[in-house]
Length: 116
Image 1 (cartoon, rainbow, N blue to C red):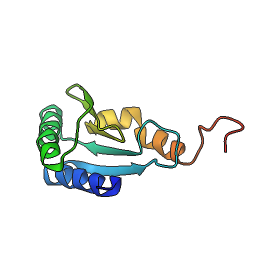
Image 2: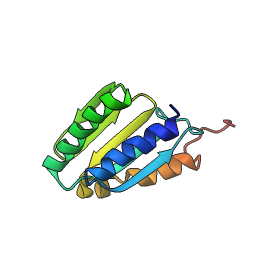
Image 3: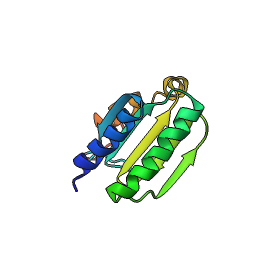
């Protein structure tokens, strides 16, 4: 299954479970640890955990392997190797501004001098 269709399946689960402000960053042409990053807002701590639980169940049906997760009530990061998923409360998302970093990364603003 292509990375694009895998991302679409993940986004569908997040949307069905009331995740909001879902944003996908295709970073295949960037020098980053993942090829794609998904950001999603939760409604709060319990919803953050519920989205995580729903994804873990869905991963079994999608034949995805969760390599690791780092979780708190406000922010959970799921690592699928080539896809990272950040489930965050809106206040954490505003505080850490990952969208800005990912947009700048995609635009090549973090390339070292001499890199093509």
